[in-house]
Length: 82
Image (cartoon, rainbow, N blue to C red; front, side, top):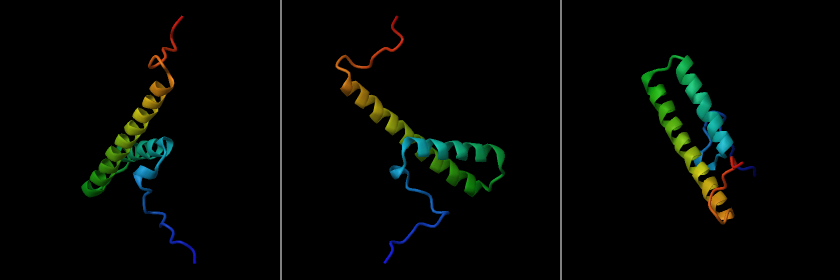
């Protein structure tokens, strides 16, 4: 028996998204909110998901920064040194 599939309208859980996926959806939400008329309820739901996507992106960036610090014995490396 095949496992159940998600309907195309069911959003992917944010915690399962990569940074790129979350950022892409966030950009689409911002564009949609700026250009399309929505009901207040729809706009609030989109805004709420956008906030969660932004938090997820920030968390993933923070994790990447911590990993870079771990890999660098002296902390972050200044790539602009002459």
